Image (tube, rainbow, N blue to C red):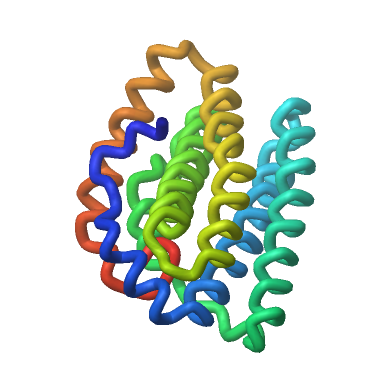
Length: 194
């Protein structure tokens, strides 16, 4: 569905399952960061009404997901741990065209960047839902995967509304190639992108 070039090794799910508290904490912060990204897009690109509308809805939904993950942490007897840096996201950011004179180009890149994070996160949720022994946690990740899958499509659609589809799709293919090189170094840690 997401056309990711390098799928996650299902063995990553075993690492994740052995560190449920860390995975849930990391996931909660991923949801919070997704909400923050949506708000940042509103602040930086208020002249795009469709973007603003979609990002306002997204920020609310992502915070609802944050609450669900936090509630799941509490149900399991855990508390929300400290936020950690996300090296995967930082590596992806290096591919953004920064300081470009065309604001629309910068927005397209940021939308595709967000689409990539959503795509990989959903793929990881799918791996968790299909490969962990904990049935309750597997169902939880299946539900969130289904809910979050539409975000990838929304970001791609918004990007395509700003430039010819061929240009956006060409840039998306570049992102996919770059992300495959980045993700090759991950998959061994108890974080959503680790």
